[in-house]
Figure (cartoon, one colour):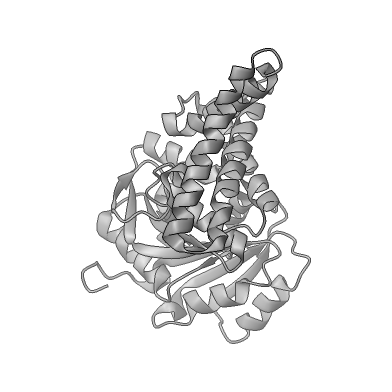
Length: 332
């Protein structure tokens, strides 16, 4: 903190989208709010219609934290929540927007460090690194899968160690004026709204800095089905971004759809050309090799989930992408 420009905490607005987060919201709020300097930071939780005790927990915590506020988010989506907080809770004094997601673990000084790093770099947006983890065996295996290049795709914000300018990263902070100038999040996106916003920020001349010294703990989905649903949405969202902006996907983004197509082609052609099974066989063999490597490295049976987790991520992302790209009509 001493090496970065001082930021008046009163300039900071924190937006926290939530939906049924009773298991995490109290710990998240305590982690980011109960540290020196946070008393003047406005923290707004936007609830998308939780059916559990999430709103009640926030109200209880607000009794001893006057800078904490709860608002309703009828649009339910995270993108709607952040935009709503900016539209209804930002005051002229607010210059920096920090986004916090309830389903993660944050260091105590997270908000102030994000704001200071953003100010020091003079960028439009700041990204931080997510270190994946979890308590269940599948979660641990999926987190280890994410640490491999096959899981992260080489994305610096997923377990990376190098700071630098990036085209996209895990959203942590924004210059509020820059966020507003590009229109905030596109609320039509169920997923990939972060990458789509980063694309517009870049087109507008803004820069994004990945600060690898600021790290959060990301909680992986608890089951293969939940992980697959998440990555299906990611694939659909990426395809929507490609269609909206007429982008050319990067090679690493095309690998999951290509793997899906190759495996399907091999399975469909196998009755007439048995050698076609080589295509899905090679993929399965690669996953098995990665799994064995992680089992030996981690010395844990939970590492046996590395292969299934990678298959769920690749397959669901690829199918979501292909399904959306094949859907008639463009994206406006």
